[in-house]
Length: 280
Image 1 (tube, rainbow, N blue to C red):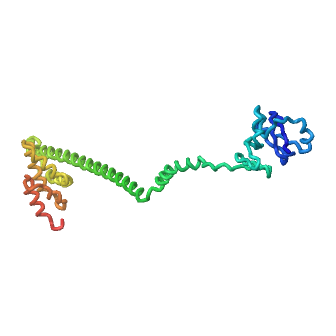
Image 2: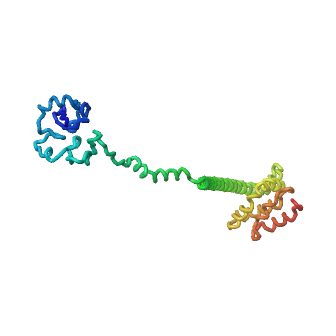
């Protein structure tokens, strides 16, 4: 005997098997939980149920009921010899809805991770930079800094050497002027006051001591005088020869070796070097 159940929310009617008596089912139309009548109640109300009630929603067409049984779950036709619905899996024997498990879908997170994997690999490669490459980079930077510092040091050293040479040339020029003045003074004689003439030999001896302090720069000074052709330059050349000859004993004559062979002072420098004691 079939049981007719009506949804209290949408008034949809269903015809169910006896096994559903007294149970609760969900309305296919509105989703409302409806209580299936008990078998005793159904028998008492059988005379009042319409003959057109079917296993699915009551439709204007009654041809479904005439063709055979309909699945009470999905309203699909069921043959008289078949107790299981081929669409939804409903079994009339077990009074159960045999649900078919849907195919597992591939999570999107896995796909996104797979796409980002190359980027993560690149970051790991950057983080795992070989130590040898790092040392090479740091070594190159250190060498560059050392080269810059060396260049600056050489520049400063050259500047200081050139400045010292220019100052020495100024002192030598002044020395030449003062020697000329001393020579002129040695020729002056005051008859009224019996003024003694300047002892030029003593003056030269004193200036020879000063000249010895400037010897490291004398070869360059001599080269500059070689290119000058005037009376003043000739006078300076004579004073240079005189001062070299008057250099005091114990002076460091090593810079005289740098005087070129064709220079006007070469002969006097060679003579003075020959007088230098061995090991001096």
